Each structure stands twice: as structure tokens, then as C-alpha cells.
Length: 150
Image (cartoon, rainbow, N blue to C red; front, side, top):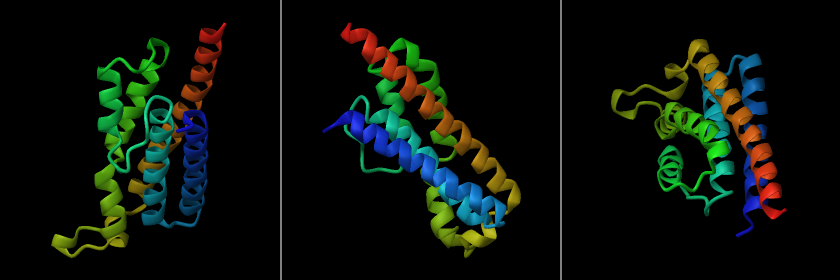
């Protein structure tokens, strides 16, 4: 496992999904905007997880961030940002992933019927915050590691 490379790759994925979500918003593709926003949040969280452990094959990353926080794996200087990222991962997590891909099957509602502009705008705001937090964590983690080597 190359944690720095994995973290950087996941951050680039998060940035790419955010770029697509922005385009979806401009084109009024509400479902797609929510879906890409969710993937941006998920990969932002996975970019942080990769710095401390292998990345799980799961869309539910909030629990992993919570576990890392509880176990003390996150340096104090990063805890506030990681806590905020965990909260965003809960808000736009696995449930939204399922809803944006499959809708509400039991009720016969497709994803295109579920999501409109307000949901897309909310999702993209969460994604923007998550990617920004992940970028800040990456910067701080780099400073932290450089200081610990000295």
C-alpha cells in the first residue's frame, strides 16, 4: 500500500466528480448532480482514510472516519476537519448513493423523479465543502509529516 499515492489518487477522483457535478448542475441534470456529488464526498473521505489505513471497498465511509477518530489515528491538528468530513459523509453517504442510482424501488420512484434542483444544490454544496476539507487535510497532513521527519 502506498498511502500517499492512494490518498492523492482519491483526492483527484473527488475533484473530478465535483467538476462533473458542477457541469450537471449547469445542465439541470439533478439526479446526476446528486450522484456525482455523493461520489465526490465519498472519495474526499477515502483520500483521508488512505493516509491512515487501507481504503475499504464500501460506500459507507463515515463509519470508518468515526472509527479512526475514536482510535486516535487522526493527529490532533486534523481532528476538527476530519470530524466535519465525517459529518458530510453521513449526510451525503451510502443512502444517497443508492437513491441516486436506483431511486426508491419499493415505492416505484425513479431517481429522476426523486431529485430536483433544491436537492442537487444541497448535494453540490456538501460536495464542495467535502473536497475543500480533503484538500486542506492533505495540505496539513503533508506539513505534519514533514515536521515529524525533522
